[in-house]
Every structure is written in structure tokens, then in C-alpha cells.
Image (tube, rainbow, N blue to C red; front, side, top):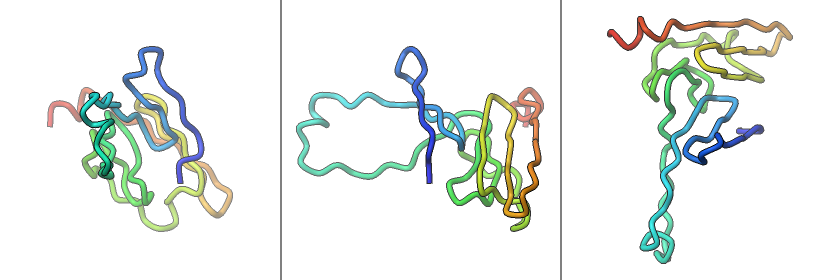
Length: 103
């Protein structure tokens, strides 16, 4: 469940607690269409899978999270992820982007 949203100043990106999503502006022909197809968001950079089982990078699963480390609440800011788990504990993870982009 996404409970916090904001756009960047250009309207090109949507910031959520699970990561950043690139927003494609629909063309006029898509607006006229009677049927709107559901799309899977493509997250940019570091994020969390929607089910909370994975730390992701550019929507690709990167690190699997065991059940006791999965988020009840989370926040993503740049390369930093903060995760609050059911026990009440909070853990932080900072991923080095330059290392990931070389893979």
C-alpha cells in the first residue's frame, strides 16, 4: 500500500515510500481510449518491491529480505532505505549506486 506521494518540480517523477517512478504523460490518443490498461511502475534507482520482499535497483530484484526484515513502514530517499519492521525495530541500508551501475 502506498501511503505517501509527491511529484518532482517538473512532474516527470513520482516519489513514493517504495522508490521513485518515472511518469509518462499520456498522449491525447491514450486519453480518448475507453479502456485503460494497468501498468507496472518502473522504479528508478534504489527502491522496494511492492510486496516488500526485495530491495530493488531500477525495478530489478537485488536483495531478498527475510520475513523478519520486511517492512511494515518504509521510506526511500536517494540510495538510502529506512525500514520499520513488525518488532518495532528500524534498520537502515545505504546502497552505493556507482558500484551497482558497474554490474
